[in-house]
Every structure is written in C-alpha cells, then in structure tokens.
Length: 261
Ligand SMILES: C[S@@+](CC[C@H](N)C(=O)[O-])C[C@H]1O[C@@H](n2cnc3c(N)ncnc32)[C@H](O)[C@@H]1O
Image 1 (cartoon, helix red, strand yellow):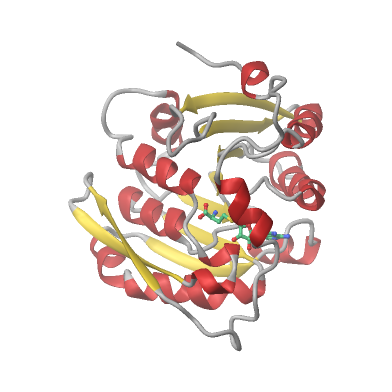
Image 2 (cartoon, rainbow, N blue to C red):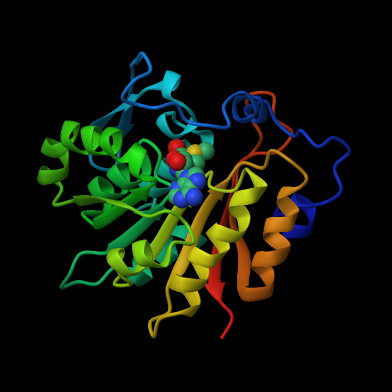
C-alpha cells in the first residue's frame, strides 16, 4: 500500500505524534561540549552489504546533535539494501553512480555523522558531512574511529561547518555533489526557513540537477508548514514509508526533493 503526502501530513488530532518529540522538548539547546560533563555511549551498526561494523560515539548529555535519531537508522538500513531488489531509493542511487568516479554526497545536519559514515562505507562514496561548528569535533571523532572500514571500502568522509542559510558556508562547501542527504532535520520551526534557503541554494541555484533525500520522523503537526513552503519551490515525493515503531503513530518517511524548473 502506498502512502501519499496528504495522508502523512493529514489532520491528526494531537500535535505530539511520537515519543521522540519529548527528547526535543527537553533538549532544545546543545550544551557547551567543552565544559559539560560527557557521558559517552557507543552504538555499533552492522552493515550487511559490506559485512562490516561501524561504531558511533554519542554524547547524550551534550544535546540533540550528539545523539542518534530514528530516521538515521532507517536511512542506513535502506542504503545497506540498495544492491538488492529495485526500490525508488535504490534506483536513484544506481542512476547517480558513475563508473569512473565515486559518488559525491553532501549531508546536512549530520549530528553524530552516522549516515554519512555509513553511506561512504556502503557506497564507496565521497561524502561531506556538515553541521553547526560545535558539533564537528564529535563527528570527526566518529570518522576517525571508522577510518579502517572507510579505507577498506574506498569511502571518504570530509567534515565541514554548514549552518543552514549561511551563504558563505554553502559557498565554502561548494556545489559539486550528485546528491544531498538529511535525516531528522525538520523539527524546530525557526529552522524551517534556513533549511529551505539551503535547499534553494543546492537544488535551484546551480546548473546541475541535484536531489535531496530526506528521512523524517514526523513529531508535530506544525511540520506541515515546512512541507507547504518546500512544495512551492521543489517537487516533493515520498519514496519510502516505514511502518510505525516504538509506540509512534507514524513511521519514518523518506522524501525526495527536486527543484521545480
Ligand atoms: C535531530 S538532529 C539529527 C541528527 C542526524 N541527522 C541524525 O539523524 O542522527 C538535527 C541536526 O541538525 C543540526 N542543526 C540544527 N540546526 C542547524 C543549522 N541551523 N544548521 C546546520 N545544522 C543544524 C543539529 O545540530 C543536529 O545535528
């Protein structure tokens, strides 16, 4: 059964759609990563397509940018399966892959870096993972912790600051990408416009047609504002719908954004 965007964004009685909203409410601001006490947690992901583990350090006491989020896990699982049966996501990646050069991917709001690191290892791709400046040391730690598997799989991960909407950051990171990835990047409403500005830069601003693949676990009704604004500028399609889990009423949805031309 396919799900339409209207059904996903439809009128749902309560604003709070799943338990992960509570994490965001408690944790709107990241702490100063250099001064707050750090509790570390390691999460191991087994990537079956390359028969390897990646290990990711979370620092939950530092804030939401230092934790793993459910949409990331779903996106990694889908990427890990793209060599199998044909799906809209696998077809998209296969279309983008070029024989003579590695796939180049930009990730927005990478958090721990888990999606970018996994994608680089699975696809043998060159990925630029980005986030706010204070988040980058933990991402670099995670990239370094997985350097062996990345090297074995010819994956390369660069870490760069990209604050959404900041033109100088976008110019510095450049436009030379085949695809853009993001997971769980739509949550606080003051971030909708900066994120849309960033997507405009990449999806509408260059000569090359670049698509944005976004895994999203909807938390609040207000998020439909982001999608309404986005749909004025981009074609937005659902390419995967995951069944709900962990007491949620909605599962992770993967969207494909392309520029309206
Ligand atoms: C809910 S977390 C998701 C992290 C990661 N993508 C994942 O799925 O595990 C949202 C991420 O967006 C980043 N973020 C928030 N505001 C941002 C901004 N203005 N510019 C760039 N990144 C931002 C946060 O630092 C955080 O890492």
